[in-house]
Amino acid sequence: MTIIVIDPGDGGDVNVSGSSPNNACGPSGHLEKTVPLAIVRRLVPVPEVQGHTAVLARNGGVNPGLLAR
Image (cartoon, one colour):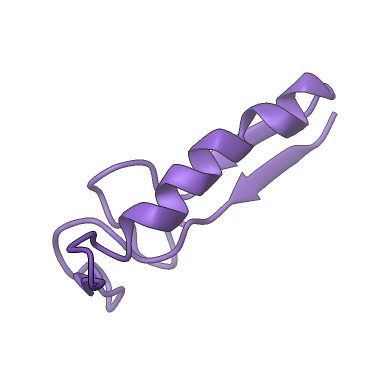
């Protein structure tokens, strides 16, 4: 059916192609970049149940540049 790309935004550990690793930290000590990644990982099964393919633009500690996304 359809390929759906979900981008959790900046993350990773190094600056790649001008894309910030975003090490912003909230009051609880959690890194801001971990929250959207956790949310989209839970979101992936939703379109897959309906027969679509869901792909994450970033999955884990690697921060791809804009061209790779």
